Image (cartoon, rainbow, N blue to C red; front, top):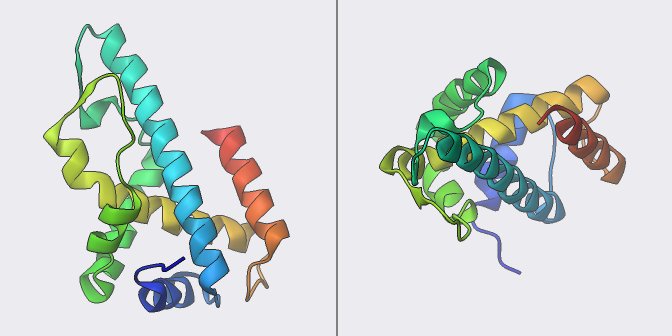
Length: 149
C-alpha cells in the first residue's frame, strides 16, 4: 500500500510531538482520520435534519473549542509542510444521505489536520515519554476519542 506524504507526516509528528512514526503509523493515522471525520459528519447530519435542512453545513459539525484550537495549530504547520492536499485525498467524503456544503469540503483537510494534532497531543498525555507510538498508545488514544466524541 502506497501512502502519500509519509515524510511530511513524519515531520509533523516530530515537530508537534517529538515522535518518530513509520509507514504503519501513517496507515493507522489514515484509518483514524477517516473514522473520526465520518463520525463528525454523522453527528452533523443529525443536527442538519433537526434544523430541517437537507444540506450539511460546517456549523452542524461538532467542532469543539479544543478541536478548533488544534485545527488552528495544524494550519501553522501546514504552511510549511503542505499537508492539506494529502489530507484532502486521505479524508475523502463517504457517501452520505445529505448534500455536503461547500464550507465542509473546503475545511475537510484542516479538520483532518486538527484531528491529527489532537491525536499527537493525546498520545503525549497518555505517555509523555513516547518516542515511537506502539499499538498500546494507538488503542488508548482511540478509546479516549470514543469516550469523548
